[in-house]
Length: 410
Length: 223
Image (cartoon, rainbow over all chains, first blue to last red; front, side, top):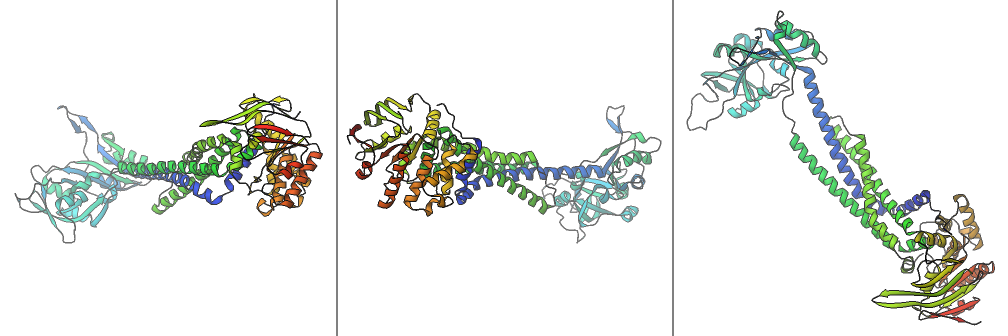
């Protein structure tokens, strides 16, 4: 008498899949919302991770190929920090000769005092006061050592240095502030009372970002025009893997009797990652993904509801054949679960392809968390499960007698 | 007794209370062949739903095969229905996307039939209704008479104790109706208890017992 219905999981799956497969065109439309939603999610997360990986590898590369050597600082009698040593005049040449070192430059700040850097020789009171760029002095291979890029003109060379020529290299920001956009006409800037010829503009550097907002002159010229200039850092570019070797040898090369008076550090990359902008964009994509996914869920719920009302006759028949209300509900829940899962899997695949395509077009390495991707596919299934709950409850409550009469069968 | 109805009543509340069945008593022994006739809205379908455990009486008791059904929950009623009661409807209710064989086998999904036996038993049932040559056809390609015979095969393949037919010839022409009724006669001759609901007197005449239903009350006609 209390015979349990012999309706196992396999029967349930077979009956549900048959219900889904019956209308392939409708199935395609139903999964579309979930596909787009999950794809948008995977794309957002994937691009975020890929870009993050890209930024990290950029920082790693800069840190692995650039060193900065500075004099040890110690507290003097006056309570302030003073450098404990100073660079020898040929510091850049000494370090550049080390095995593993590719380029080196000494950089020092030049105190301008009351003097300023201007593009016009006379002070015009009607012109608005412009903050003067800072003045830096450098020697050796500046461009090579800091990984700079000269967008216009050229950098100064050993010839300029040897002759102490009045030439100046402008950081892009400084050039803009001075109103200099081109070097083809050999414009001049006045540093204090001296006219300097602008020979080039730097638009980016891998390290030493202060160069972009400064005017840079050869160290010899700076010493000739402005007196003593103390170099505060020796920037070195090294070949990959030579970091520890150069870090060990450079202080010895600088001062063999007191190598410990120099501090060697890995350079930090110049420039900030536009993290906030990226985060905002990711948030928009994430919102699109979530909204589309919700819409997809409503789509599944709607179509399942439609399917329930269309299949009243079938539901009535199944009840007559011995199906319990719970079995009817289970069939419809499983149907929408499978639809959701299908959308999730297709969407995740589309998302992965999109991430790979975008990464390939930018020459990036695609980075994608496998668990997150699989999770997105499962999320589609979960959406289907939730979306199917209400239609399934409706199906279970259908009175078989009315259902059998209402719908003409075939 | 297969069916014992004891003072069974069924009320519907739709604004006003409608008594679709009123203190109905009915006994059906194994092998009985009963026709229920009556005008539309007299309570024929309600009667069939109560007998088929698709609906519950609001008063009285229904004993099926000696078991009081009023205390059974949906799961037990469904199990009993799947194992012991077969249905044949006016509109055949075959699933259009499935073959004849698959339509018959649907009855086993909710019954207690092991998967290994399903094809053999469905084929056997189709043999009984004379449709073994149609097993792989889809319902849409069959005539009305053939479709109803598939539905009958589906109803009897689980070996029910009671077969309920609701206007089984309502959608059929004379010849097909005759062949379906012939099939019912044979099934009954093999011992199957049969209840046919019809408004067609000629169909009702073939049954051994006839009851009329009017305003929810049952009257048995002497033969």
